[in-house]
Length: 148
Length: 126
Image (cartoon, rainbow over all chains, first blue to last red; front, top):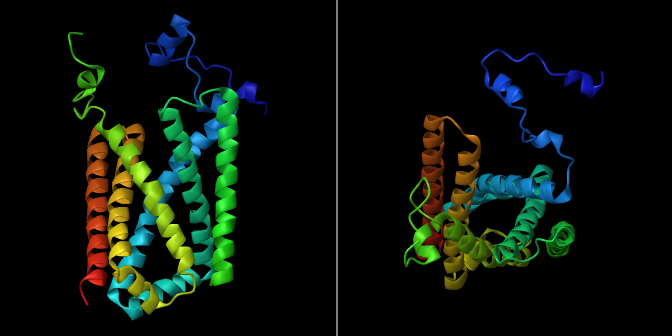
């Protein structure tokens, strides 16, 4: 039913951490699902997710490199997978993931240098990173489509 | 406080006694990744539609081979540092944490060495 009904507090078990927290009546730190989603917050999580995705992608990169060193037959197998529709889809996705992480990584380096913390600036730099990643992905695949 | 500089105070601190070296190495490899990965993307665009012989001849030349080895070191190291932070954040069981950290370190080092040997085989070997 309504979400507030689900959140009516249960009676906490005596002596439990919950009961101690309830008794102390201190303001509790709200957890992730309480906050309204902001772009900056979403991009922060996406930065981590894209990083993990690319760590896994290094397996594919290793496979490609070892196949190239292996010889024409092994390379042909990788090329067949790479040029299949699923291969192209995965590589297209990884192109966006790569340029997002690269662009957002530069955004992080700028923060590390002490600039761009203003709310409006952080929001707009986030939008810029998304636009950069999208534009680069389209550009790279246009070149590949024309040349290849 | 004493006469120590702020950097001297931070060095060797933290739960792993490694101070800020994880942070600085992550930034250093981030910067080298920007250059090397952009090179790889431009190379991939230039090699679009190329066959086995062409790709192999390209990687056999000294500059691409050197850049590829640098890229392998830089990206695998950066990945290792990033995955480490995620494991430290989300894996709370001490045994599982140490085990997964060891696994990630060994796997990334192993794959990186395999990649470097592959490049050397193409560049120097037959």
